[in-house]
Length: 510
Image (cartoon, rainbow, N blue to C red):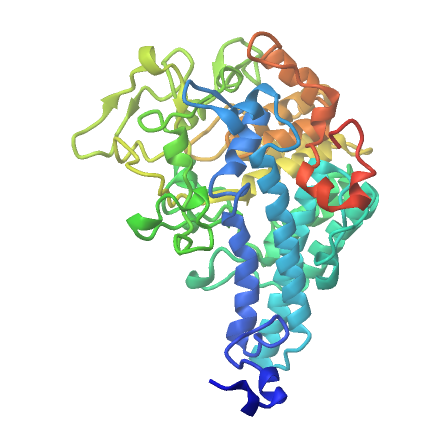
């Protein structure tokens, strides 16, 4: 081929088969893809397909090491983790990836000229979803790292060097994001759209945001909305149903990450194949990783098991066993755990070998229906917020607010305890504030066990250090929980690429 006959203009011909963020988004289908791509971050490293449950269960002593636990996850349970722990780095990266994609979605929505009223409604919904997702990301960034870079536009997201915003500024952003999301999100979706953020999810997270800042009256205002029309949230009569394969249909869920398993070639996607050829699935590895008959990387913590035995609420008599013990862990008759598994298997129930295994998680496991999980391919959805949590946040707000109402707070606790499949003994309405606080904190621990809630509770209550060092004291193989651990370390890779942040990190940590 001779180049002498070529025109220079031919070298500048645009390839019409390539796309950019400026040219791709044209139709309502493509605008929806921008939102769905932001939701997919829930399956990425550090998030709910795998690392999320390890990070927050191990840090909060909801789960303890077993002999199979090594490396990255082992560092979380003995507090030896550093600023290059892969799980923590993955969490940071994924939350900022969620921010990046939400920013992109908000940018491209500006170009959408809806063809009719239905498209106008969709546009408002998608914009609201982007705000909700960005709010979720910043909620978790500020609660886990404190001061972090604030990137509120697509251009900001493409800039490496960004200073840290104040905690106060970040909380204002989180409040704003959920407030912006709520008006245009639907109360519910059709069955094939479940898993998207709803109006209730926005209000619930706004209430949680106020609670975490100790703005109790504002938290009550928001959370109370969820107890009346147009919302129809209710406690699921069956505690077991909350943690089974069809828990997408529970009336209790405000927001859950919806897991689904497709084909065998995708079963290990959570180890790096999130959006490659193995990414066409959305299941979780938790059942396999926690399962006593499977990989058994962790056990339920002894402290959590012990928390299910306490003084009887009304009489104060020692040795009351909470009915949720048998729905939370396999154990012994003495500690209230379930003593059989495979109740619904074709061959019949099997005695749980307590003498060999001690206590093991039952929640989020399929062992009532099958002897083994077979592979890391669980489709049990991960609860992010459910109605029981809303009721307990309301209880806490009434107990802690300046004009406290202990009786009202206690009534919300008892409402959770009165779930038909639980029917735990009720607390009297005459508790002191101190006793009501103790009851509330115990209730959150038991009701939300293994749901990655306790870490956030301990940190915001300011009792993480004393509690965790008591539950597993420092010694051989166990480092102490230090003051610095109430915030996660800024990843070293972020410091290397963001000089504005690097100059603002103390003691090689945060």
